[in-house]
Image 1 (cartoon, rainbow, N blue to C red):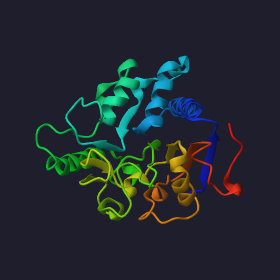
Image 2: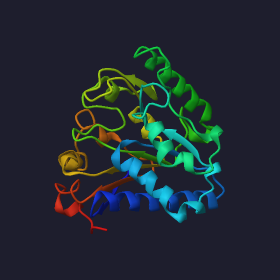
Image 3: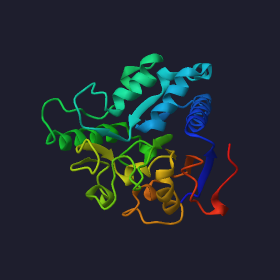
Image 4: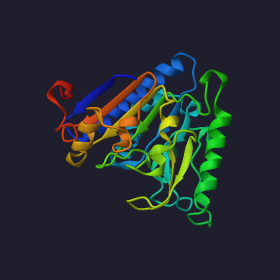
Length: 259
């Protein structure tokens, strides 16, 4: 298990700006080494604000965006282009404003008229896509993502894996449909914890005092069934990027200097 790397920033806007700078730096380093980075995007307030910060900085041009592969950790199973879809928000925040290769953008499926029953087929389709993108050196059914970004909810959910839900118990499948989510919309698609843990680096980016208790529990050894974000770990690095409010209940020995 990797040791968590914790960074605390003064406020959500500072957190979004710092996370954007970290991601640009990581992508530049990966490309300088001759790699095509594989990153997994997240939704949520800070996750989308981070993409907006990348769009706003001239440093974005240091990245060859046409040679980056984009995936998603979860998605709301809504019609294509719905403003609540993570894909729609990511495109509006960044992807529609940079030179990407559409063939390297891999959104999760949308509801094209099937209703909730179509989410299971869409999850299976995304699992097949990931399996096809995995290389022999990945040693598994998903690519070894370079950076997989996640948010979290106040009860400790991450991606669309909620406490005590069927998805949190999944050990075989890499992508599942989630029905009856406790927050709207009720139908979603999500990577499972085994798929998340295949990533080289997992970044959990979250802000707000309402998240503080779950952050503290996850970083103090809580089980993933009760606090799913506790099971989100990278093979090489697990990075928690927090604002001061989200870090407010961490034990003193875990709190780094605030940036």
